[in-house]
Amino acid sequence: MSDDAASLLAHRFNVGDPIHISEKMIADFCAAIGETNPLFIDPAAAKAGPYGGIIAPPALVASPTFRRGESSGDREERFRQGGLMAGIDMELETPIRPGDVISTSTEVKETYEKTGRTGTMLFTVIRSTLTNQRSEVVARIDYRMMSRKR
Image 1 (spheres, rainbow, N blue to C red):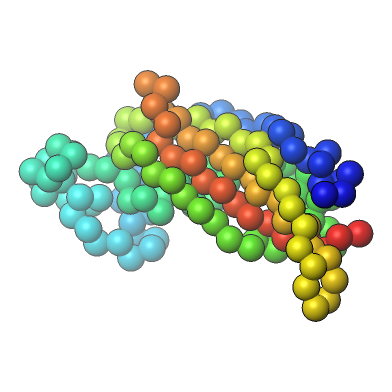
Image 2 (image 1 turned 180 degrees about the vertical axis):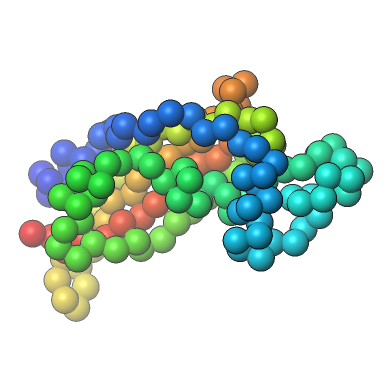
């Protein structure tokens, strides 16, 4: 691992204020992605379902709403030479419900290099951990970013 890659490990990012989840926010997200599952949009059906009320679709945790872990200046500096999103992994633990207040903690989890046909690439895995107001982990999201090695 290069010194540049090693220097990123355990780097924590500013994440801003917690996000207050509302039923309208969930409904708007569902409308935007074409989600029609009644557990997410129909209060009566959701109440009779396994969670006893409306929950957010799992994809909400990967939405731009929660991708606030680094300032655009940090991102532009680190990935200015052609960086791109190389993958996303999600571990879902507790459903998000209307009324939840979700806090995000973000850090660099891992860096590694791979050599391909066009040279060496640096991969950076940025982990965001989402917790609710009861300190329950809602989700862990790993964003894998790739940039060319300088």
